[in-house]
Length: 105
Image (cartoon, rainbow, N blue to C red; front, side, top):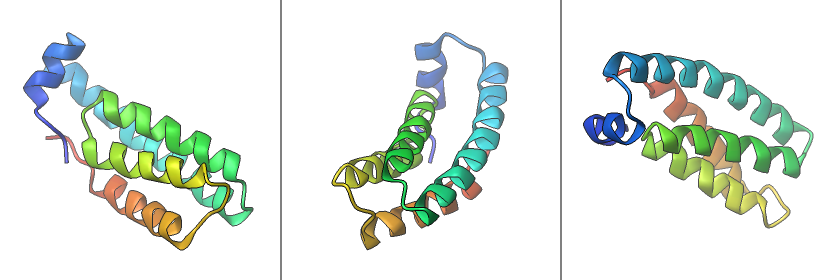
């Protein structure tokens, strides 16, 4: 799920301890954002779906959590079509599953 941690530490210029703190913060943030995403889907707020997916995507990409970044990108791109398709909804469910699986390496 998380790409090469050593390369991420070097790219960000941080210690493993700080990375782990950021990862913990990300997990909390991602869970909150996912809850917001579910609410946005429930009221069919496509703009909010795109914004929330973009936010999760950026944080995940910076931390090297490629699976979550890629799923979020797919949600964002699919929502850009102006509808919440079944494919998008399946991606959202998978995003929630991946967030739950996210752990400190």
